[in-house]
Image (spheres, rainbow, N blue to C red):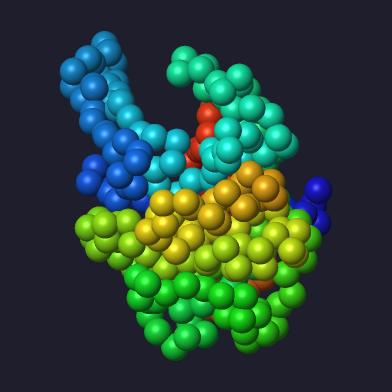
Length: 262
């Protein structure tokens, strides 16, 4: 235990989450983040002068920095594993298989592939498709090898647009891997793949082939809306990735506060 504590105390910790605030970016398929105080200091004051404030929150499971459970997508009516989604879902209780509350706390090797940095640009253009060749090149430039069980994070540079919701969402146009890039990830047996965009894959594409391939066909989680700028600036290409989804029973996704420890 003492050795573990000493290692953590001497490590550099990177916060990979984006902040939540009213007006923050959100995919139009999901509800926005709403926030307000329901009790202010002074509304109730104890005899000793103590007072407290508290808030109410409303948000979707896929708003802000979050992870997709495998049940988030189906194809041909079937979830990952081949079961019929229609028989395993209700509006009141959600899904019954592969839900976000079944994702164990994540402590895994993380790998950053800085696609924007390797391309020599601050941010990739909206129509940029990340190909297997670019994934190979970014891994070679970082001198990292993607291994089974890794969490692989792709930097497009779009985290810099977070405070401009219209620019970040861009009518749901954005860079990311296509189907070939998704197969590159699945062929390496990764546990999860994430990026700094709202949709992870190149959009628009109404078929969402990357989500289908990773979540439904391959059992690989997707993480969206990461902030990878500091990791890239300091060239931290492999690290311990730590994140824990909320235990939302029946949920298809959950906000997370991911950390990179290097």
